[in-house]
Length: 399
Image (cartoon, rainbow, N blue to C red; front, top):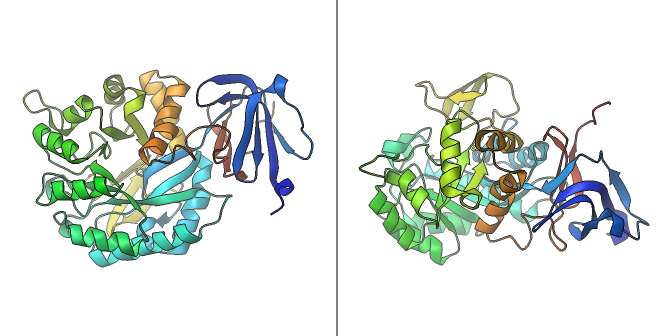
């Protein structure tokens, strides 16, 4: 492509950059990358740029990164089809998500294998812009604890099996980037060590580990906690559990589903006070019903009922969410009183650093991928650019 074919200039906008907030700024984009960020008064050479002008009270923030998402708009990673992943990648920019980990769930080994092969193939051939980028695979289960199964089908849960994990990693073209497991189960610590040695995030989740067992897992290399509070040993004054360990171990980044359903707003506030913005990663853990109407849907072969913002199995167990990541940002601002800068850290910076891709994503800076979200005056998603192309735009409100 001739570089002149894709030059974009976003101007007269408040920009949250890596190290400062520019009140009236501009962003220059060439092809997939940001080439210049600065103050509007210093702008020169507008020629050949397609100009995006927005109301002066709109805000540019880095694209959101969802490290834990199963599905959206009728599609699920476990469908194991190109069409499903295309659907997810095309739908997610509407909520500000510019990249994500396609997340599997506990199922028959053959079904998981199909899903990781499909995702690995898709990642190798995905479009270079214009939709959310799949950064890799989050393997949630089957190496978890049946006593904390939640919506993970218990009949398929197995103890950590390193040879099986290695086989899936090979079949996925090395695209498994994060594994949720129960380190207290036989083989758990061995798997954590392997993950650390191979640059894969080891996450404690769907686990009944004690505070002491979490400490052993951290020593072995665990540095992540899957959906804090949900399906794990909770905080108790005589056994701090996984939640207590997450609060006290700075090494652990804690995911949270901030929809007001999975975690009470005051508990979100408590976690924020303990972990601060540096220690939390906002996720959706959403299922295929997100963006669809109330009704009955499938999750890992189980029927899920979605009604009024809540997804449950027949026995009432929460079954993922229908949360949009942009709404999670608004919620965390409301629940904790944090600044937008702190929210950006939780939804963009931290996941990029955790995935070791902060040199490419997670902030607005020259040289990085042009993954940018423009928020309107109500903190709603107005526009999303994925690697330099507009992937979502809503109609501007009439004055």
